Length: 484
Image (cartoon, rainbow, N blue to C red; front, side, top):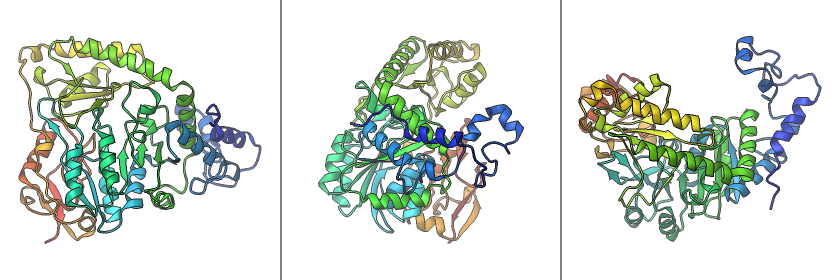
């Protein structure tokens, strides 16, 4: 057992900051001396003293031997991994590296269709061929859940030459599928299970939270420590266990997608977040769960609103109780419109969808936050023009859109393309990623046949207040297609 109260990276950074010397190295602001006063007025001066490069006493991210290595070893123990890498390019680079380390050009990878756009980037970089599984979709809740073990079993039987299985656990809504069963099936073919656990970094620190991906049998998992714990934005971790994945390949892949000038402020925040959770994680998560339970109980009593508590679906076996999803459809509102109103009231959700608002309740929230959330949701239902309508506002979900992969994402991405008016693109091969954001799940991706239903869905999202990202023309008047 390691001493989890240690903070080796923070200690090294403190030593480096306090060492008197003349700096003739990057960054150019020289320990804050050259930073604009506009920025120091906003953030103060001290943070820039810690914005240092890979000095000898601070270690090297790609070949760590001292402070970074010690910090990563402590993190591996705290999160239940055999080896952990710190990420400063977000979970995006971790997902990309996971695919690059396990799949090459033409290799098959089994994965859900509701993956994050970072997975598509991994497919483009690696040249892997996606074998998509449709996730279970709950029409009443307008929420896509997890893929099922049965669907994974069928895909493996049809494609036994697949090199990996990748799944999302939990989903953006906090829904967890049967990861243990999926791991057992995957390992029967002696291939690794990769997990996008971006929203589940806190699972390891309380028994009332869902089983962590590693404990459920995952070979590799990527966690956004900044999303649900106390690290700074962009700070994530990649964890690995077992021998199904070549550690050296993971390290080499990360060198392709990580910055060669990592932020030590971000790295230090990972060290601090790990120490915080290792020492006080269960207490902090108990407080968070109590706040979440209070919020759900009070919101469930507000007429016209409902919260996601449990779903009878084969793609739903557990729910992260710190994730709060509120369905507003009975108010005659879309989630997009409700978010806009709540923003004006001083409450900001994580994201909205056609029927729902989703809120992340974390260790940084307080009782005052919960009070404000409940009060403003009550105020939302009392807006006269809404209560007079009081009709269910239902819209078609993207899970119902048909998808057909024609060529690999890599081939489509690098192919010659042309830009056409939207109405001329059906039946053509898409050459770009098109997705409502958040949550950043593509409706169209490079290599897929563009369908009329997909375009109608995207236009509906846009008309109702959603934001379309990934494509060159975010107004959605045109799309890039593979040149015929």
